[in-house]
Length: 456
Ligand code: PFF
Image 1 (cartoon, rainbow, N blue to C red):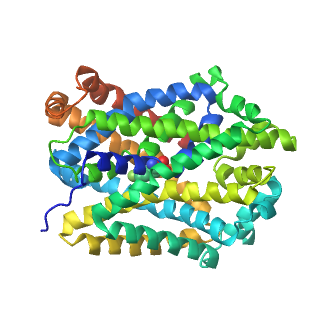
Image 2 (image 1 turned 30 degrees about the vertical axis):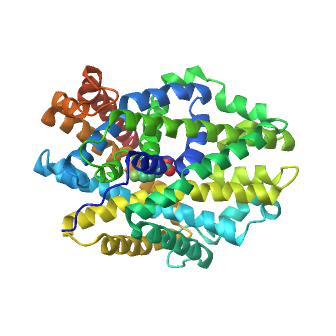
Image 3 (image 1 turned 120 degrees about the vertical axis):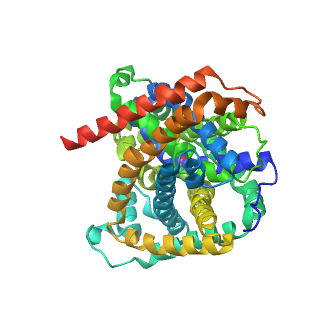
């Protein structure tokens, strides 16, 4: 088998991990999850989830990848053979998320290429909603119809896949070059949106809604589950992605500090994106006399319905800011999407000894075809169902197993000792307590509770 490719250096590795973590989830998922789950008070469960699950799991995944120089099934299989199954489960989740992630990117291309003129279709909330459902999703033609793939969405999907396939096929050095643009550029674009948002009249209304703590919500366990779910999705842990990325680093790579840098950059970006989104929404609420509670209730429609409608109300340069926002989404999503494809492609190449070029092509073609049913009017409903099962059950199970396998079978002490050889920040008893007891208990409770609730 060909020798394993490696990232050029640790900075490129961290950049790749940050690129994977910072994605659509930061701009589109975090703001509405935060607003719906206690506003400013949500930052408490969110930070708790970051410290008790996000960073420890990232250290575990980095450690497993680097130590075994293999994908998730190899990394977990080396602890105990049957655990290979859990590794494949993580990789399968990456495949599913990739399929749906690319559909969302397909919508974004479609918005940008087919209908960049936000001012026309986003005149108000109703018009923006109609545009999304009718022109992009074609839902008005009947949500449950199958077999009709909408040409405009198809082109969005083709564009997405061709771009991702081309990037991944260029190998790790090619990916490294792309990351130099796709990681910093969206940060700059979001800062531009933020400055624009903060200088608008009414922005304070939006920020108050986003940040004013509703302390009462902290006693609701749904809020805590939402925080853990968001941390997993946002940090890309539990999907085998960070294991695959770390397996492209030499064995003496520093871990805990790299994990902390990745995680904190991701969370700071989410916070900033929330400010950018809610300042503009506040302006919109004041300008149109629509209460903030209604504006922010959109959930997933926030990025594709409410935010565009809010941008369409800007005093000047509407098309410019509309395009800027869509390009930000594309740049954010693209490096997360190729990290997901890379996870599956690396696993196939590790398993069957095929070249990366072949495994990448197989994965891309398969995922594209598997995504076609989602490009029908029913797609958005399937996305919801898949997202729910993957996030509530599969990823949580992978995370519990990873903690228990490292904490109890490999031994938290042994793992820590190995990691500490090269660590800039040492890990010790707290890490051990978290992965052996705390995180499995919280996550176990969350799976059981979700299941019980669903059975009722
Ligand atoms: N972290 C990405 C986001 O927030 O959009 C999504 C993601 C990428 C999830 C890679 C999982 C993954 F393996």
